[in-house]
Length: 451
Image (cartoon, rainbow, N blue to C red):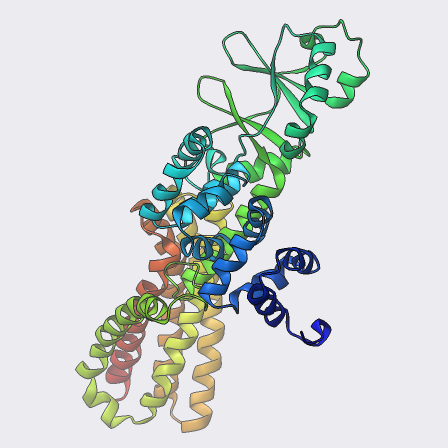
């Protein structure tokens, strides 16, 4: 085999898979960072990817899948048989397992669930029943809870007896429940170790612990962790029973993923998770849906120019100025869209804040519109020595800027109220309206002042 130090990681992986060297494969993967693993695997053929996973021990394969993005992990698992995938998914942490299955086609996910351990499968189905960006969708179900009448010594004995099983739980706290199963306290391991064995845990626990409801949205979870410096928070059902534990790292990761998906959708990747390792046909089709909509809307906006064709013919300079006007005002509107989407993500505004958002954007729009209008109008006057053309273009830009920022701030809120993803629909709607109004303003003002 060639010197591995001189080979690209994916070449080494390909060689190890071809050699069917499980031990060397495991050792080599241990030397790679998660980013290198993801990149190297994406360069392998589908057959080599499937062979790589099956060569690893199920637990090692599960660890590898957990290091990848949900989209890449789902693509890999869908290339395996349901039996092979189920063995790996059984070894994953509960939240990672639910994220992976939620990313897969329903038919493939169900086939895997049917072949998993029944208890693990039922737990996965329950997690899949929660929205991904809620406490129930992000929590882990591996936690330790004890009845409040138990003694400290009994709790410590249980922790020692089940040390191997609990080692995968990331245990930093244990929880205490009432006779009815409701969460009543949290136990710090330090307090347990330093307390007498014959002391009831209800006398050691911290009462009325901070918790979050299972359906709490992501922005509320972020606020909770900003307020309290805990590594994890218990998740409770409406009746007060603890159903999982929410980890700070998982909330931070979910926020990063949401930001990334929002950016992708805003850029026209409707699924929000396109990878170049996916099929060409699938990627092309997903992008064409967006581009086709934009083509139709652009033609609608361009129809305004056709109506004022006589004006354009008389003032040829307008042909060069129209793109400038709609581009500048469009950028202003997109800035407002980005701020509204960002503030909604952080929970700072709601659809009912529509009027306040529009009012604030109009103020900014008036200031920026006047400045931009004066700059462009002054340039046109110096260029063409025509104050009427400068006035028409400058006034059109000022008015369109005010309109663009007002719409940019409001459209995401309106779409949210209509249960439409603002990151997908806001940009094309804003572009069409701003272009149409920009075309109309500059051409109608030019017709009134010049033609």
